[in-house]
Image (cartoon, rainbow, N blue to C red; front, side, top):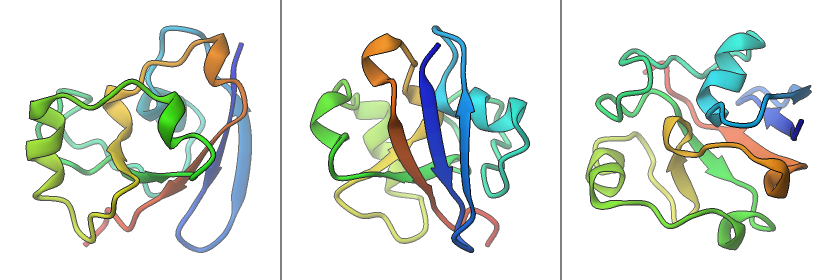
Length: 106
């Protein structure tokens, strides 16, 4: 089971194990990580699961598709390492992933 470290906007760190096949967003919701709102439930339709991927992990993730890229244009404070966590499916290769939760409660 991959471990994911979520760092919330206020600096709290939460290291949790998430089952393979779950999204980073689902891992956050299932572990009550503050800041991942996920209003659309993971349908890539709201950008309220927006997060910043730690620089060491950006190149290890699958490329974002056009739909995610388009939705991120609606996210607050998009950066080069921005991703929608509903679009990142976890597997053993992502063990140790570090995610900085964006301010999604605007």
